[in-house]
Length: 90
Image 1 (tube, rainbow, N blue to C red):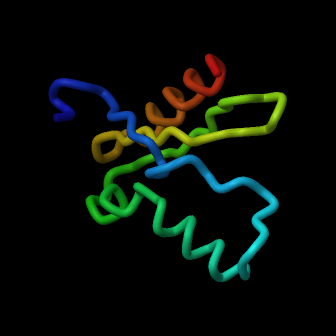
Image 2 (image 1 turned 60 degrees about the vertical axis):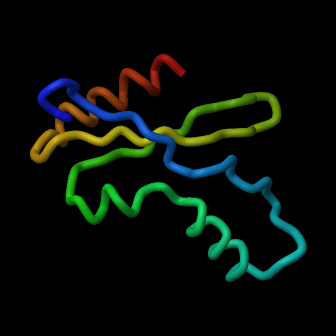
C-alpha cells in the first residue's frame, strides 16, 4: 500500500470517546472501555510508525476525537511533519 500512498489515515478509536467525567463505574471499568475502543493494536503489532492527532469536533463543548496516521518503516520524521499539517488545519 505504501507504494501508492505516503501515509494511511485511520480513526484511533472505534467510537467517540466517552464523555468526561465518567460516572457510574470504577476507573478500571473506564480504562477497559477505552482500551476496547482502541484501533491501534494492528499497527503496533505490524511495527509501523504511527501518530495520533486530536481532532476537535466541537471546540465550545470540548468534544474531540482522534486521527491516527500510519507510515511505512523509518518514516517517523515525515510522519511528524504530516501530523503537524493536519493539526494546523484543524
